[in-house]
Length: 232
Image 1: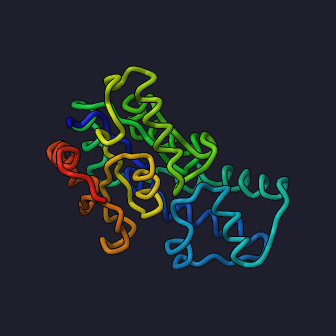
Image 2: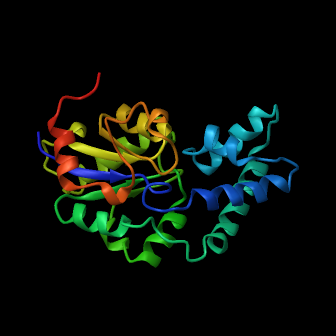
């Protein structure tokens, strides 16, 4: 087996944006009388799409919401995010990691963030040309932790001829910061690497390999992961 591609999660892996997402969620929810703590967000809701995060927060408080009201919450967060993110940077070493990995194999993104949020940061950082394939929130029937986002990323890599026709999901590595994302990748058959930007190693049981940050990921790490026997 040889490494065929790498699929990156975005928030918490390439972009140091999870605190900004939390801040905007808090602002939007506060407007409807709901307080969301940082502890709650990181324990229960990080990794969900905006839609699923709002639904789960409300459900966990015994509340329901109509589709129109839900869409209004999502739209408000969408409107607030660009100003909140400002010039918020990628993680140190993220651009260099993308450059060295994409020089060897195709790369893609599978994220629960909205496409315009991802593209905004990629454009500002100059990384947009590296990622012709992006799977974002709302572009698959289900979001993480379901396998759909990573399955779709693999499908697009194959459809567009970025990887060999015979390549399998197990020839591709997903890099994630949350257990939700790792479960999504494993469900789609990809190999999994966790980075410790949002959680400690013990909170990432589905990671087959772990690095402290994206800056520490090397091509050799990724090739070695694909070459070794998969976890049960």
